[in-house]
Length: 252
Image (tube, rainbow, N blue to C red):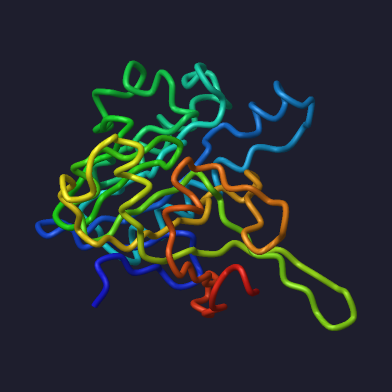
């Protein structure tokens, strides 16, 4: 059985961390509506209640020991408490299990605002058992690379699907494949033999937030956001949220 198993029809997975089972999500982007209002002048009714209820329902479904967020718990950088009446505080009050956050590029100020209620890891990620967690906007710490499975967010992977008459739709998806050691050794300036390499599988998580957009992984001209991708990914395959295996993402 895989160490990280997606939850059917949801942008979430269950990770076997040895002594704990974790419900893992990425890119929650709490307060995104306040951010869009400030950044782009876009007025949207807050979807905070729906986001919270979706996460709580997943907790009820899988009964985890903790929730791990792969970065970007927040959306609006540097203003965590004011975003749409502090969506994060309301979420934390409703959760029955502890939360661990691997901070992403949107999570400035989280430790100061919620450090007494959230375990905030280093930006380089953390390892629990044989599973490594990192947001993906930076290179992971070497300890993470010793895991058997590495989970990242940041990309918000989506797949563009077209039918025979030119109609199309975009769906969230998962991206999975083996990691190559060479890009990490080059980044660290070390010989590959110097790394404690766990031959890891990479699991790129879809965004939990439905309003945060994403990278169309099968469309030419779309570039990845993570510095390790696509060079470090070998034989990457895409899956839809319902479990449909689409095969090599470059050939979809």
